[in-house]
Image 1 (cartoon, rainbow, N blue to C red):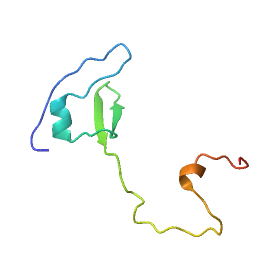
Image 2 (image 1 turned 90 degrees about the vertical axis):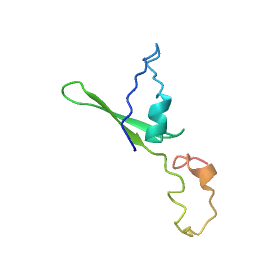
Image 3 (image 1 turned 45 degrees about the vertical axis):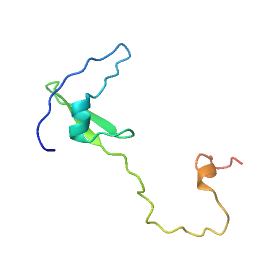
Length: 82
């Protein structure tokens, strides 16, 4: 980050907040990123940006398990489901 940015926002009735544009730009917040919240013993809130990872497994080689599979269709199956 090049410099400090401070701004404020209001918590709405559904307890959602909007990250101010200046803060998003300075921190590099993008859609899909997560904000990790922490409250210390004095009630001070801090927020950490957790960047969305794309292509995290792109360098891995496929493993032959001896039968055809389709991870996009099979990933939510429970053992014994067909």
